Length: 407
Ligand SMILES: NC(=O)c1ccc[n+]([C@@H]2O[C@H](COP(=O)([O-])OP(=O)(O)OC[C@H]3O[C@@H](n4cnc5c(N)ncnc54)[C@H](OP(=O)(O)O)[C@@H]3O)[C@@H](O)[C@H]2O)c1
Image 1 (tube, protein in one colour):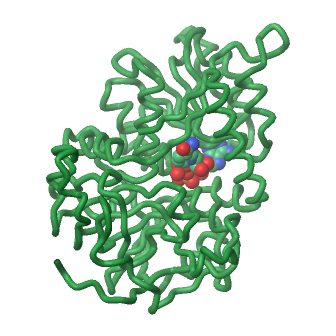
Image 2 (cartoon, rainbow, N blue to C red):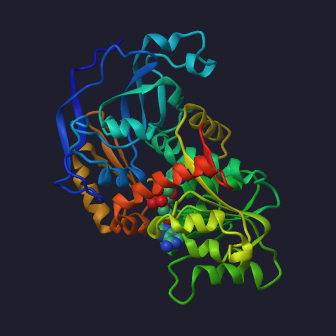
Image 3 (cartoon, rainbow, N blue to C red):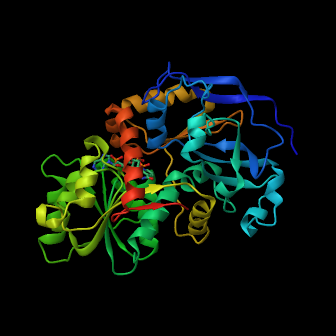
């Protein structure tokens, strides 16, 4: 077992802010490393890259940094790295074959769940302790920086969307709103691999990238002359080409759902991963519960929420191995010490997700650019978290046309 130093480098939240700023995030060089040897079924991973998702930014803004049990909280959920220590429970006879294949030196990736983030044990650090059943092996030859995003929150969320859609395949037409983002890029690739026709919605500057991922058509939502819903209605309604079978919303648009009968066929599905966004919980209640007879939209509405799991990460790794998905587009790599440059980028609105190579000469990775992040950044983060929690509770209790996938 490789010696793990007692202290490590880690970014820590010193003050709540979304987006993070120079005064809200600090790079510590003396953060305590995870306990070695690890306990139970935990493993210790030397982090190579850690990706930031929109939810990480929300959490940096809302989970109080001052709570006594969150001493020097480390943010972020996604990671890739190498196993350096195994807990005694990892060799248990109950472990799956996949779990047994994970040994010292194995390259792994995945995403933490929200609870370690509440406790302040995120992935923007040199070492993390993580339950073995949360990780997948990095597919042979797949870049570690891409693995952090692909098998992390973004890729795992896409497995939910594909599952919820059911018959995504040959002869189907899908609309993907937010096709240039972390989730949208993976969804575009898997939809194409399954034989569907993809109408991708993103800003014009990302058109080339999204077409490179296989999108058949691109609709630019930033067009000043027409609303997105009108463009889609024209595309699908005006010339008898037939309406879409699925609309996937990875950007969060109430209008897109309300107008969906104009471009989503009867019996088609509207699937979103963004709960309420700027408009609070009311739209979710309206969309999920309001009968058509009293003004509800006559299309099923599914709001999904991810609980990260090793099985789910492995499903995405399987897609990578089959060559169904490959690309996790990366704009730029930053040194680990340059996180504040990334904060600046976030403030300037050209940011989607970030990876930190915590391995000494590490780097922060920026993938594509997004207006969504900045728009969300201006919202009340506290409200967004409360809203997300309420949505999750409502989903569990009511289970009305919504699914919470538990891995
Ligand atoms: N429910 C869950 O479990 C779950 C899991 C993962 C993510 N999410 C949520 O899903 C959303 C997407 O995540 P992500 O990682 O893909 O985010 P992301 O990487 O920031 O991507 C956002 C995408 O939205 C597009 N966009 C921005 N404003 C838009 C608008 N007004 N109309 C149409 N498209 C717009 C962007 O396009 P351009 O860059 O081309 O402008 C980009 O493609 C986030 O809100 C995230 O919190 C939820």
